[in-house]
Image (tube, rainbow, N blue to C red; front, side):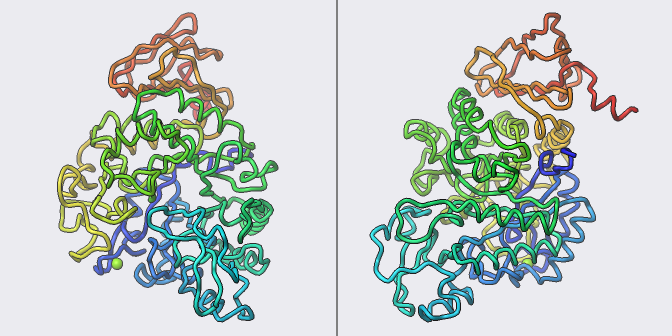
Length: 551
Ligand code: MG
């Protein structure tokens, strides 16, 4: 039964229709273009696509300001194009998860336009209002330095409205049962069109008590209500939550009885992962993994390196954050919102292949489900001339043709990267497809390897003692199979001794290099790691998994 939980052994690929492929030559990515590239996604082996918002929008926050939850923005195509995309994705066995953006709407949404007409208006109570300016009018901003307040006066309504995000994104009042009914209707609509689940945007803000209260109570029952509805409608659909909360606060989001969101991004581990990459010291990462260890049986962490936002380092201490800034974002323009970095993975790692491989190998080896970011598989860079988070939202680099093969039109939605080391002229899919040793082909091999290691997604795990602060060694156990995976975060080689401590661990079978399987007669192994090296072993040589296939 338990291996029906498809999300536990999947590789998820996140992309924005906007910047992936433009088929109709208007400079903006569209569903027709995305359909053309489905065979590419299928060939690298991903299981599911997470689509950023594509609904009608004034597009003042990368589509996270929706003005109609039941449609497709005409720039990306029609609802018919979406259904055709769903058909083509499912035909290739690719599941589709879409963003569920219901903390707020665009101020151009018909609900808000109606709500502004006054307190007796039809949708007035769908938003959060205050007659006088709340004392905390400039607290709790999501975009410090850019955003000016969380309460803004509306002249038409003659009241202040609440907005966690930009002032053009009024918060929906989820305490109004009508709003929650509408959210379920939105979920039901897209489920009916075939999506496999939702990446739920800004989860804590959806369920917090609105208004002036300083002590914000979380209404987890709202989440459980959405989960019940989801599962009634479609048994294997999932919720993947964006909730950057402390480890001690996570369990109610998952729900103690398999009744909350199935998956959450592990923002906590992500930040210590970058600290380890910056300093070579794995101890804080080990502690972060331990701190997020205990989750309910069917729950799952989603692990990622970079996403469409800034790399948020808000959970690190000031000293730790400064170290990561020094290493990966030494210039002020590389930093954002006093807490993060607006660069891609490859540029932070200076395009150095061993470090990129280390980072990705680690992401695939973290206990949970890996979520990749489009373009990272070829080592795409960023454009710091673009404002804020747009730096990491440049068009996919398909070839060395004009506009990177993304579009026929020169003025694309965001400019393509056409200068320097990360220019599309050198970094592109077409060139890497032809090169057996390219990052693209390496990534495809790692995805295949990850999917052959269900121990990581389904199993239990332990940190193995190495006595070396630069080397992280982990063991994973599931159905009598075990893996041992090691990562060296240092730019020097290291030799460590480990003891897997499970039956048959006198022999380790190397899953990446053919000729370096290891025999340790007493169950202990001395292993050599190159600078930024990684080793993947299955314990005991031949595996039960392989035996099962033979029978
Ligand atoms: Mg287009």
